Length: 233
Image 1 (cartoon, rainbow, N blue to C red):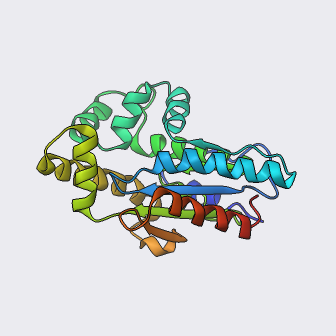
Image 2: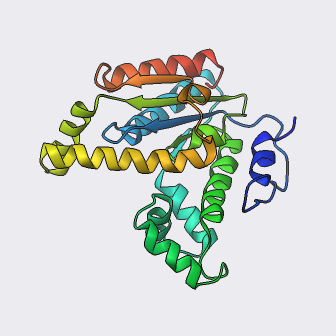
């Protein structure tokens, strides 16, 4: 089967290389996207524990893992940049300054926007092909959507609820927390749009869950059931 992701990326600026070997049945992979204030990492960590336990009981003996910060760390190593700088660039922080910097330095010293995003995408895609992985953020749903053994969930909640969560956890005012939520949502949307090209969420996500209406345990139970039904464990 043609690798639709590699074909798609090769058509974009900043071509990435195809994997050295083809994996005939990639995955399983679960991607978790989230609005700011929804705890995607916390869900991913616990889900790994539950899926691994299920796999051990079934005799498959596969250990699930989750990746988030590793995406930036591995990409930064490939780009020969610091993880903090890669995060700044991919999150569109201080974008005008970095655009000026890119004009001043050659591509040899400063990778362009396409190269940064494609490097991140290649790492995510390679990890997803190996399987038994939960990917948090960084447009994982778009990058791995073509894989048959994949499931893609987005965690959402009303902005006022998320602001209360952020205000409590970050010790800031509700007004500042709401502003931070909106800014972070915008940055994440900008990053995703590079891969999703303005398409609607329904084109990429298999489920959208409301973190205000559902507890962590309820979300986890739903995801474990999905994993069992789809034969991931």
